Image (cartoon, rainbow, N blue to C red; front, top):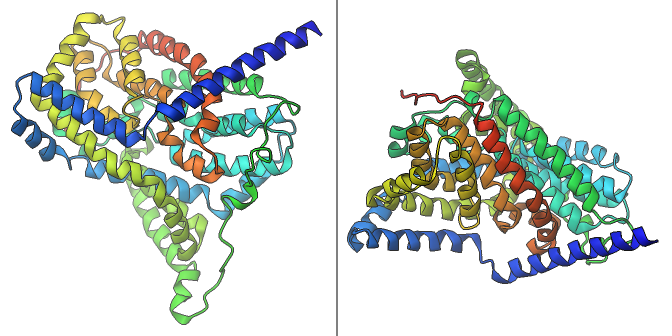
Length: 471
């Protein structure tokens, strides 16, 4: 009895802490766009204090504002293609089968946590939709599951390992010469994916973080008797995220091609020729840049949806999730322009060099990236801001620039646990609010932060410095 009482008190303390943090976040955290806009103003003020005139700052901002348009579209397509693949009928059937495996509330939460992280390694956009549908299907079969714990588990991939996987914005950008801003390219050149995500060091981080996260999800999830279920919260998963069944065939002659698989199959056949040709010439790793990654997912989506009408309906449903990317990434490009032309980049390089050694720099860079992520919640956009001075400092200290990309990837995911920006697609599928997930997400963050920082520091010792590759 005494042991049960202690466990109840501990669980109550963790729950109260989670609720308090969630309520504080909901009350005080503004929209992610506000963070980006404030960052522009702060950087402009700093540039002004460094001697840049208002006219020069405005010109720097406006001149570079559209520099990231190709990258912005590439990031938007990661969301679109991820949604399209996850919402297809074959994948939905697979999810329904998987949902039959967990039998207990705690097991269900851990199960969702694992698949959230595993799918995020393929695509963070795919992971959010896949996890949302999986949660909906499990909730039909397993009674007494806490909807907050399971929702937070569904978001876990975005707060842990997504940036260590195939849709890593920073790693893909650095492997794609056309996406790298010229000023950054002069520092780093291109960095192959074989030096970043396809290394044993990166695999080590993935395995450790998945094991840790699933364990936390399992032990922290309340049992059936203490859970707050979706039904208790008035959430009806039965009406959320269902496939469109309203119309399955053409009703007019002009609609025939919309409901026929012919065009989709022809497009996939043509696209497959390109993919096979690129892989045969460069190899699978070198072929994996942002454009080819999105192209392959797009072809898979066309095939899985079978008809143009199904495909177009899925694309239309995905569009609301890309608004933040479209409006915020140009702001990051503007920040980059002010940063580079004001000389602030050089000052930041000098600062990092003054407080870092070859041994300590990966740890310091990780702490910095995690903190900045609270204010700039964007893996790719934030990397554009950080990369110039982090990579320049790494070069000066003879630290592997490829590993600094991975330090950034592992660290910048941490603040996603408390910042609702990347939760939006999942929240839309589940019909919940960010505050519902924040308590359990923050609990994961408390464990993740020290583990990630220690890993990036220890593994850095095994990564040799490689000179930049240009051309």
